[in-house]
Image (cartoon, rainbow over all chains, first blue to last red; front, top):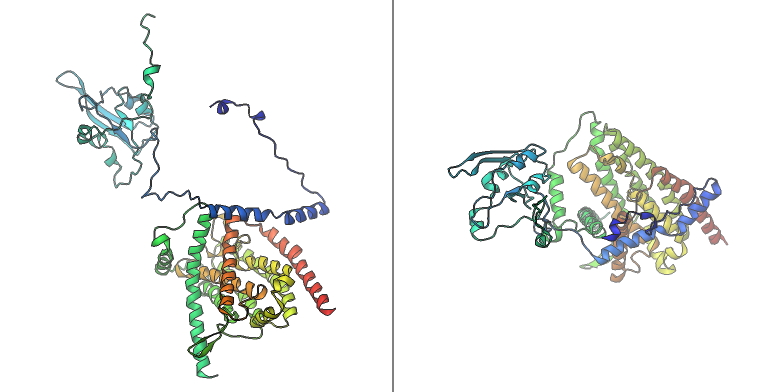
Length: 203
Length: 327
């Protein structure tokens, strides 16, 4: 990490490329042509591509059959998570995601239910406007709205991806304990326990 | 002219046409694969095993595409131009001995359509007529980029005709004949012409890149304007004919270089035949190899190279050869 933080690039092995002056007279140009012709630089290029062909170090990923692993911070279509304890929705209807959304694409409607708890009645994301900035996932205090890793979004309607029911973890997955916890923006880092300190209450 | 000769000639013509049309297609497959491997890619993989049927898929696409004749083009010339490219490429093949003569059912076959006594002159001349394909196609297209490309292509082709002709003149002086069969027989007795004419060999090889319009002299396409040069307005099989012509030219010039300079098919044994095919394969591979490795040169550099470097060298080579032969 140290080497990346060092901004003093001058003494880091960088050097100015030594470029000769262009020849100005005919004899100089002639000498340059002769030099370039007999230095056989073209064959260096030929050798490089031949070497790569012999090494056969292919970098292509044959995509539909073979896929790259996606990093946890990848921001694809949103997901809504459930609570591990009760399988209930995590969303508490606080509305922070709606407020922070810079492209104004989240709309939610809430009401107070019989137990005087806030309940989400409507929740939609307009994916046509969403720029996948990740602010909603970052601001969510409950880790309820997160980004998923599903980047194959071909469909005849974008709305197919933004049903609340579609985004919510299916109850079967939840019962099978197969809900994947989000590790991207706003999530708790693995060694959070060691870093957490008590909030000083006596200011 | 007896019937057997007539039938033999017709069969040879058909075989050459079919084999080299197919080779042009397979050549594109090899080109894509080799370029891909040199750039750490896989190339076509999905159509058939290892993408082998990609050629067929491309063929179906070319044949079934609509043949668009845009408005404002000069119709008849626009239509005939691709035919000129393909036809001249195949006509050039008439004087090329592809293999040593062999015997089938007691009948001796010479795998050359016509062993004319001006063979090399004919091959180079007909290949040079192929210039009219790009030139007329580009001029008739009513497209300024096509026109620019056509002008540049014809400038390159005409200039490099000089280098081709002068460089091959020295071997012709040594052999004393223009027939490619005589070239082959001369080299059986006297060794490869490459050893006595290395400069002519290199000049001819460089000019071959310009004659076929391949990288590093790929000026027939306007790569820097991101348009496909004289073929911009063409679609479907007309464009395909340009393509077949280009690849057939590459194959034929890959045959001509070893026949003139590298001993040809030798003394007529099977080994010699395979050696010729191997040499041809190397020269074809080299066309693809340079495309992966080298950048294109600027048009003015190309002209500079032709008129100020290659042509004087070719003339000096001819003069020296003449003096050596005289004394």
